[in-house]
Image 1: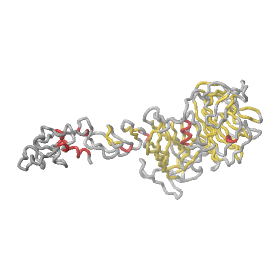
Image 2: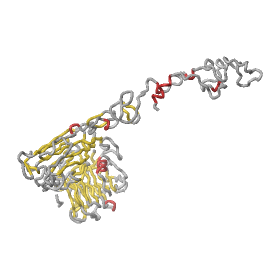
Image 3: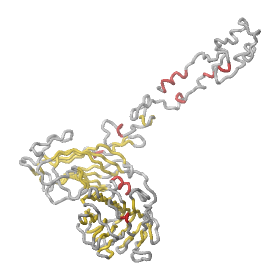
Image 4: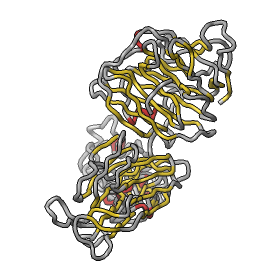
Length: 550
């Protein structure tokens, strides 16, 4: 293949005191005095007051003994006070076993006791959210047990300095060839954290070809051959490389750096802030007017004679996807293995040729066989082009599209190994942009003018068609191949990577998870009915990939 490279407590305090005489709204009816007693013969003698049928002759003002039953003022001795006794009206908050601490607002210490208010209740612990973890909570998480844990640790305040050598004049100066600072991420083993950092400093700009650039931040990209300095952040797990001084090379003044970015870091991973003075020199700290730049609030005396970058942690939160969220269905069970001569065919269909595309696959690159090795793609034309494809060649993983401005491609360095990796590419026709992802991280971006070109070729997995012949065979297992007619966002691609089977999903036009484990075909779990055939026909054997357990 030829391709370019009330307050409850206050109210309850009085509940144990004697309430005194109780006057019922119907003072003459003994049964109405309290709902818990009825006509107590010992309390109100029926011979003294016949409430049922008063005899006019028997009831005389002089005949009614005030000590027997005074209708106007019931005698306390006649009315049993037991219904008002504390044991009978004992409210739960007064029970010795019930916590009576006052919870006023989340994060506030509970009044009258220990613990913190969280969700309207007092809980044992120090925090409800990370914001409760002291005056500077950046880098802390509040665990499910309401404990403050410093996850970021020494990552906060990470700093490198490139000082100018004494006696410098003009626009540049000699400096330290390289410098770096590293920190180990804390937290719970097996948990991935979303870390938001603030980067401040004085830097010179540099161009990073094929980088996914946002201001001075470049996700991925390559280092060109110019002498301008390389300033980057690397994360050991998940593997990532970011450049923090993206811009235009050959500008001879420095720039103030102050922006925020978020990236993922696994607990226990190493984060390194690195500077490489490529030619042992740097631009002096002078802006376009020749004035030194000051960056207040950093740990460096200002203005600094040289360049520096300081990284401060703004927030740390467990990543919801990588920390146990369940998405989609199914369990990885089987994959298809290609040994350098096999292919899987999905018949041409209109919905497999959309204007916008996202393609995804899991692969294991044990070895790279031959000049080029195709993960999957859709051939276009009679030569060596593809409407969209992912392949490997020359020690790189590559991706490309056949757009109006020809076949456009990009590549990242690759080392074969036994580990599985998730590869993805998006094509945005409106923006005319391609983005390549490895293990959920954007690693390269490049322009490609719409529209994409399509013809009647089938979609192939594990091989390609070059000049009419099957070629470019893959070597290794492939699983969870997907094609979307939409541009998946970085967050969606990260979620897709952690999902074995999406099933019918808006924009998903093909999904092959190879769960059958045997047979000549594999179902399309997208619901679009694009069945995959092992080999090139129902009777193939030599072109059939092998079912392997995953």
